Structure formats: C-alpha cells, structure tokens
Picture (cartoon, rainbow, N blue to C red):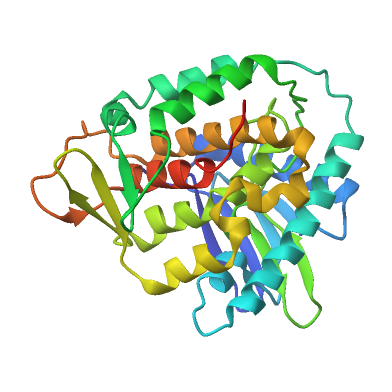
Length: 321
C-alpha cells in the first residue's frame, strides 16, 4: 500500500512531512489543522507545527525535532531493564490519560451508543480470515479461553449497550511510534494525530496504544510469530524470548486489565469495544486479503494472524457480562 506521505530529517534538525502526491494534500492539511488544535489545548504535550505550505504542488509541514525516542524504540530495547521500560510506559500512560481528559473537557460530545455499525463494518470487511476466529488458539502452548469469534460477539453486544462520546477533535492515535519520550527531561510528547477516525470516542486513542505491541510485531518486525498447525487447533509461538519477557513483565501491554488504573472500571466495557474495533480495523488495513487456511507445515504468521492473536490475547482474560 502506497504511503500518503514522506518524512525527511533535515541537517538542521527539523523534521519535514510532505504529501507523497497532490492527491494527499487535503489529508495532510487536515492533519496540520488537527495538530494546531491539539497544541492549543495541551501545548506541553503536542509537538507544534513550525511552518507549513505547498512546494512543487505537494503540501508539507515542519516540526521541531525532539531529543527523544518513540516508545517503540524503548519497549523493544532488550538492553534496557524491564523495570525501566515499564516505568517509561507508565509515564506515557499518565500523559495519554491527561490528554484524553483535556480532549473530552474541551468539546461538547453528544453521547451515543452507535459503535455497532462501525464494528460490524470492520468485522464484515475481513471475511478472508473469519475461519481462524473460530479455531481454538494457543499462544506458546497455552490455550486461549475464548475464540476470536466469541470476543467479536461480546464486543458487538456491548457496542449496543455502552455509551460513547464521539468527538471531532482528538489525537486518536497514541501508537508507540507517535509517543516520544525524552530521557533527559523525563518528558512525553505526541505527534501524528489521526484524522481518518473522527467522530469516535477519544478513548480510542488509548486503544491504539494498547494494540501497539502486536502491531509492531505484525508490521515492523514481520517474522516475530510462528504458526504451528495442529489437529484441532492452531498454535502460535513468539520467536523472540524478549517479546515473551515484555508480555510477562509489562502487564499494561499484555492485557486490558493492565490498563485498569488509566481506564477505570466504569469505562472498561467501552474500552473493550473500542480496542476490538482497533484490532479489526488494522487487520482490514494491513492484512493480505488472502483467504486464510490452516498451513500444512510450520510457517511464519501473516500480519493479519498476528493482529488476530493480539486481539485474542489482549482481550481474552476479561470476564465482562
């Protein structure tokens, strides 16, 4: 899939993001407007646009380069202690929680229960992988208590009963790559809000954080998960011991219950729905689209399988009525 933009680091230290063609100018303009709006409500958290314009027919904007690392470079850095990585994750979660609270307070969101249609649309868009959602899945030899289909059914049911607060102006995209951490100042900043999901509850931004571990495995690492066909089930194996260590030692990335401190029990069901939607949406966008079938021999899992495994793992341990 062709990228809508290019990012260049200038020798001056500035970062330039430009539309890859004129077709994406409006998309980038909406992003610029969103960054400016968010900077106005939380200037200590959002990296501002220094300049924007059009060059050779393509829209661009310039950001100051921060002396910081994206969270993806920290979480997957096996030279750091697990305790240090978890402490930085906690710092980032505190700032994300702060940003979402400000986003909600700054807008008049009309409460609605209408997440069902969004969720169902994403589920129906990934029919190519529905079969594996009905299988018994094991991760590193441990069976998941629910099938993927059971999680989808639960999310669809809750999407009809929970109350969501859709807004137009929020970040919506606290993915690891968009959360920057500066070790010198212990400061967290955000970049790259998502304008494509406007009209959704701002808590969706935290869902993007929650699925980031599995998205990184699926899209950036690529060969992180191996699939082993079995007679009546499918087993997936994490190929790197540090990935197991992360899930075992940073519970905030392993299960929805790990985020209860930042979500609150009252929002747990709503977050379950939004996070299910987040995983399904990513499967649609990043999946191969090829009809899934059980492999005849051990092989590397496809991105859509890794994301399915993430959904199943992250949301499987919650007893939600």
